[in-house]
Length: 316
Image 1 (cartoon, one colour):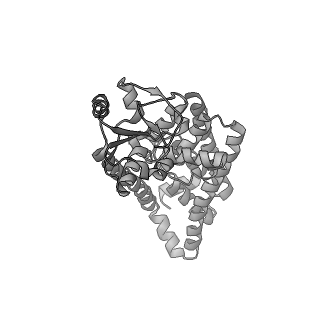
Image 2 (spheres, one colour):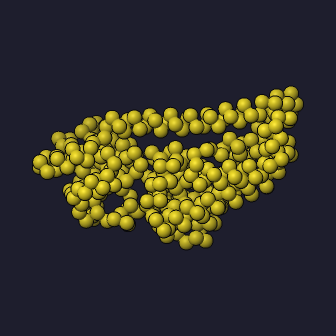
Image 3 (cartoon, one colour):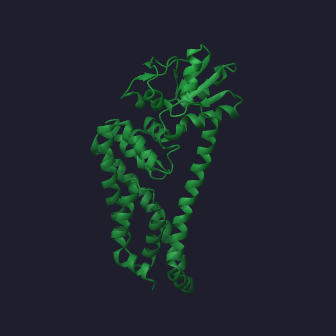
C-alpha cells in the first residue's frame, strides 16, 4: 500500500479536520478532492462515514465562528478581506449579500455549495447582527448537507471500485497521482476563471482621476452606486450625483439609462467585480458607453475626492 494512502487511512480524520479548517479559514486549498477521497475510503471501511462528517463539521464550525465574530466586530472590511483570499472574489460579496437579503439565515444552508460564498457567509452573518444561536444552527445544517453530498459522491465511486478488485488495486497504487490531479484541476479551473474575468475588468475600467475631471468640467455623467444597503452601514455616503441602485433595479430601468452620456458604475467589491459584471451586461443590452470605476468607492474615498450623504434611492 502506498505510504501516502496508508498515512491518510491511519490519520484520516485528523487530515480531514485540519485540511477543511485551513480552507475555511481562508487558505485557497479546496477540500472537495480530499472529501471525495475520504468518501471512497468509507466504501472499503477503511474510514467511517460518521467520523469523516464529524471532522468536517467541527473544522467548519470553528472557522465559521471565527469569521462570524470578526464580521460582527469589523463589518464590511472583514468581508472584503475574505473575498480577496478567495479564488472566487469576483462574485462572492454580491451573491452572498443577495442570498441573505432574499433568504435570511437559510442562505447558510446553500452557501457551501457555491464557490466563494461559503467563506464570506459567516462574516456577513456577523456583520448584519444575526443571533449566534440561529447562525450556528443554520450553518451546521449547511455544512452537513455540503460535506455529506461530497463524501457520498466519493463513496459511490468507492462502491464501483469494490466490484472490480483490479480497479481497486490500481487506484490504491496510483492514489497520490489521482489526488494530485484532482487538486490541481480544481486550482487551475478557478485561476483560469478569475484571470479571464480580471482581464475583461482591466480593459474597461475608468480611473477615479478621469471621473473627477469629468465632474469638475461639467461633463454629463450618469453615475450609479451599485453597493448593497449593507455596505452603507459603516459610511452612509456616496459620490456626488450618484444614483443608488442594486444591479437588479438597474437592469429593470435600463431603458431609462441615457445613451448620450458616459455611464460610470462603482461598488466596493474586490477588483470592481459587481461594477465590471454590470458593465458587461449593459453592453450586451446595447448600452456601450458604460465603464466600471477602478477601485470603486474605497479608492475614490482614499484619494480624498468629494462625497455626499446617500439619498433615498429613486428611479433614473
